[in-house]
Length: 259
Ligand SMILES: [Cu+2]
Image (cartoon, rainbow, N blue to C red; front, side, top):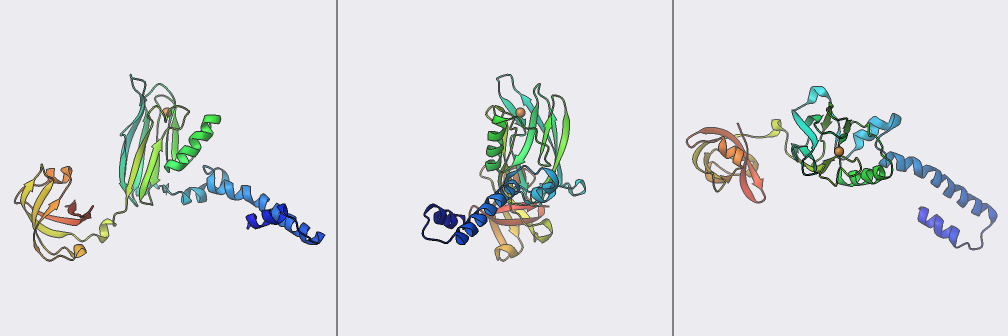
């Protein structure tokens, strides 16, 4: 729409003054409206729109303490070889999980912990390169040396996000890492199947299970070989009776949950 107005104004044809005024008035009101829209779509969530804006973030929304599923200790510090790091260096969550990040600055410099999309971190980093802004949004915490505080966050959407320190130079020194949020079904919706472990091949990451019907895979009871990750296999022993969930992961039948 604005493009049409622009074209009209840049290439004036024979128009009466009233029409011109109308177009100018409309164009002017669009200009006035634009900054309001831009602020809503981009700012870190300052002022009264903070809650609404935060709720719209792709990475999720502020979490409630009562909903916390996992608490994770996160350390920020400098290393002897001149790097600046977060420990752990990456996170994996399920969509819908609420995480309490217990963030501690074990370094000698000030650091921050910001969770957002990679794109928005890039934008904020560029802004901070020009002017060191102190973030005070629910998706971040900035800490002096020795300080600690927490961020409680609910990851609502599946995708790859990022945690970072956007203080100038810190990102480049290593202070960023991926947050992978998987789109898994709610635990209550999962259908567990009974099974008996026949054979384990830990080296190959395979486990043979004599199992009942796998409803989600539309498979009858039989004996099959499944993939499983290292931790899952480590928790299994041959002859053990289990209840499990299997799914196709990258085309391979995989044990995704055991209880
Ligand atoms: Cu930092």
